[in-house]
Length: 167
Image 1 (cartoon, one colour):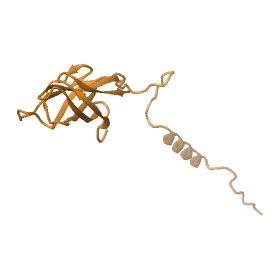
Image 2: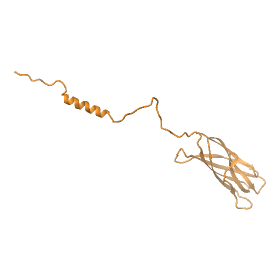
Image 3: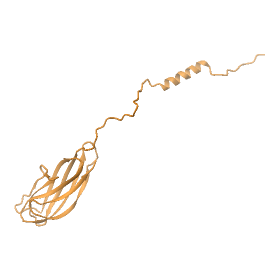
């Protein structure tokens, strides 16, 4: 009687197909040469980048004598920030606005009375600063509220606020 011999190993054709499938699956047809240290994509540094400051506020005069006022940023008048009252005796409130670009650091904002009909008047200065950066896109600008200040001012005097901008 003859004995049937069962195959004991994997058929060579199946073995070749399996090996070929593994080789093709592991190969992506790309040669990757890596440097010895990691590389990061180039980026523009934002340290020292300019911010756009939109300053708005008001000077409210108790006697209503304010005729002309402006905004100073770090001691320099902002172009286009002058506000003038249309009444000869003065206004009780003048709205002030100005836009300036600035780097990070410690800064001052001054609401300055240029002319008024009284020798001295008591003022309430209020305002806010909207800070935005071109290189960082926020949905809305960051708003810094300036704390209200009361002061008795003569022409040429002002109320000064300090702000700190950081990177």
